[in-house]
Image 1: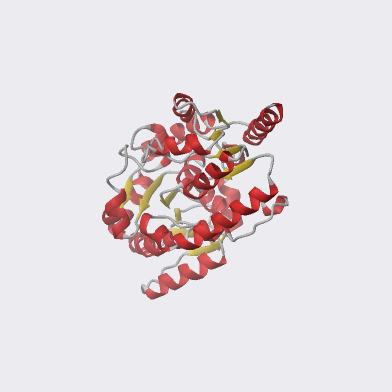
Image 2: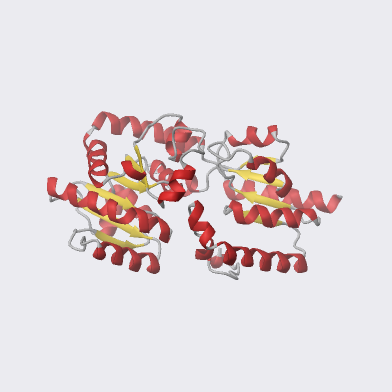
Length: 343
């Protein structure tokens, strides 16, 4: 967004906190940012406010703006179909119009009386229907043949804290089984890269041969035969690249004990939720041991029938999520502003 001329008044990392108790530790700072932004927007009186993700931050802000007549739009619905469905009441008070990225979400909002538009999943337009595996491997200096695994432990610092060591320990176990296997680990930024290196060194894993890259996550996924990925939006990116994967996630113990009882569905990975079945394995918290991760990854690499089935299902998923997201989103915003002007 900054590349397109938007101004960032606070670093995005301030809101990039995941987990119940992890958020509480940063609550005062985040609340101060929210209040400062509210005061700024009330003074500027924009034609509309568009909240992008960050629902716990944005809904509180949007409710205050909507109350004084500023139309509010929210891009990407929180997972009310997976957990905390009662948030729909809060959303109704905060959001003038919701933009959703999954087709089944439209009916949820219509039933609640909240104006909604399905705009498709943005990355479905960016990620090619047929990935260039050879080109990706060439760009990363990887051999054209041989097994390649991409490891995506998460972009948030808290995700790296709980996932990185177990993920790399799994890689170490796999290398013992096949020394020729290559591992690519993309990092979201310099801070994440430095923290990751420190975590791995402290755990005594600095000697594990991995190709650590800064950015290039899509190239790493395209180059891979299978992916070990932390639960989150990255799982759907892997599905759009039609790659077998193992979804894993670890978090602070206290957060896990609370959150594990709050879900409505047996899946947490977006590809499995969209498919309504366990297309790919999910290993969470205590189940996400290095040995279990390594075993699950081997199964994804070696089962050709499974790989072909996944490719077909992920291709169907890609087509279902494909829309002109930017155009449809912009049209919805213009209609919202026009509606305000006509009042």
